[in-house]
Image 1 (tube, rainbow, N blue to C red):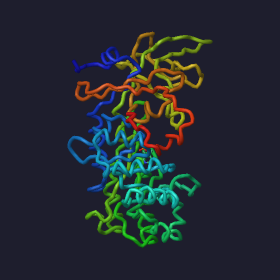
Image 2 (tube, rainbow, N blue to C red; image 1 turned 135 degrees about the horizontal axis):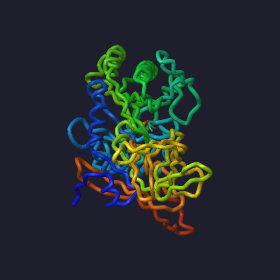
Image 3 (cartoon, helix red, strand yellow; image 1 turned 120 degrees about the vertical axis):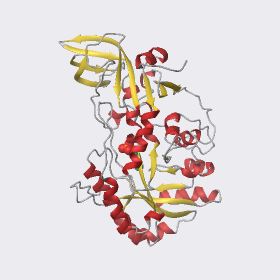
Image 4 (cartoon, rainbow, N blue to C red; image 1 turned 90 degrees about the vertical axis):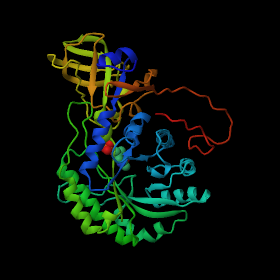
Length: 430
Ligand SMILES: *Cc1c(COP(=O)(O)O)cnc(C)c1O
């Protein structure tokens, strides 16, 4: 029996902590994003936000255009292939691609890479040549300036990401001469979680301007232009995904001016997104194990801590979360919400508004579809990973759990498997 009516029922059946991902919300987010964008824009989904196989499959299936995978590891590659994506649809990115990973990606049929430097481009070319193919490459550009219209001044800080925009003109001949590669376009990604439509639009317009200039400097026509993203969604708190109703009307004239043939696909326009597509699909269910008072302050201890929902503390994102119980509307009081780990760092929310809770109560943290289990400290203190359930219309489609086991390596064996260069096992981790 896979039907359910309440979250409490799911918590009872599968145990907590439990992530519930609602496929109908994935559909809605994808539909909205495509609607805000210029006609024909492609959307790369950043797997790092949530590589769960069912989630990424939902972003490919159904009505409307499919997302394309943006990945940066062999684990994410395996997740993309398992979810039925064509290798040819994949964009492989990341500042630390190893020769082993690149060989594996090329062998699997990946042909589109984002190059973060001349050396990175050479590594991609070596992997492609070794297998007798040519890799299409985007140059990832680290802009020296930000959008003037919004007042966001990105001062061109030093970063491990991308090629400094001011160096492209000088290096252009070198980029175009790397054996095993063809430079087919540009990749810009300068912001995350931009709630403000004007700010987001300003940055994307700036990316279009910059891309046009770099096209001139390179002297070759762009076939693919990925102008980045920054589409915002709430994280662990109540709230709605941002809306961008004026974005399309703002970008299309700029594209018409700078890339007169973009509507025919010269270049194909693309954006990328993680949290916007998956964030509001997720609800984290966790059970209260204890409620205690210490020197006048209440601590509610739940079975999900930063081992389950803590990646964001490492990624510098904002706590506290806002927890609600089903049904909503219970009176609230100030208390700290803490996880089960033996560290004071396991704090989900300090002195936040919580309903009156008792051991055994199940509480729900909203908007937890992005940067959940795989962005958390899953191994810390040896607790099992949370279960993850994919649901649609009151039906449970699948339930899974990541496992991690210690496997002993043979001592003295030549070559590690860290870069996959000895053909190491690459089972999907989603
Ligand atoms: C992380 C990342 C994304 C996704 O970011 P969101 O803020 O979740 O949309 C997109 N592109 C690149 C290059 C990234 O590193």
